[in-house]
Image (cartoon, rainbow, N blue to C red):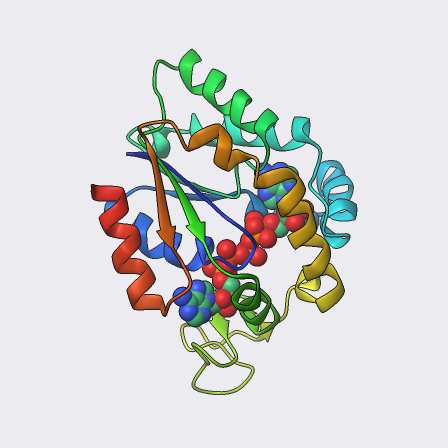
Length: 214
Ligand code: AP5
């Protein structure tokens, strides 16, 4: 299964995608995580990407497209993958279609996770991530047992720089301007599904799974 999850920041792509990819036995490929890793390593590409990410803007297409082509053609993605965070605009979607066609394959599902603005802001501003294993918590909806520390590995929890209120507003604006047009691009394709992502974790996951399997 070659699957794309897209939707606004905070829709739950990362947390639900992790569970779905595990259930399906396919790798979860998260462009945001790949870029944050490049930033942490201080590579030339990471330094360039970091400036855009801190400001809540999209990293230039040529950087992200190159990164994705290399990743989806890796051996562990030969039988499928779940993409989260790519494509993020119509130019990236067109590049993706062409890229897959060159390899003789196509997307099986493109799932749009739809959530209201209030929910998005609430989820992003309360998100906490483990510095060591990357596990994602939420201050109110999925709090760690011990405040500030990861249940899974004991690592320290932190808040992403771009989960500050001013950057969240900018990311939502960029989403409306650049990513929302993907709805029109994909909505008439047979692979397209829309999922109501406003509810609680279990309810959203059940709808997501059903949409992917339908
Ligand atoms: P990226 O890391 O992709 O961020 P994003 O799209 O803004 O998405 P998020 O990770 O913020 O949200 P999510 O939907 O995954 O939510 P999550 O599951 O964590 O991108 C970051 C930056 O990288 C971009 O701004 C850009 O600069 C750059 N970038 C990345 N890809 C790019 C591309 N293709 N082109 C150019 N630039 C690119 O959930 C959020 C919180 O809510 C968590 O705490 C979770 O526990 C909680 N939660 C989730 N669902 C529920 C629920 N149903 N009920 C209660 N709580 C919930």
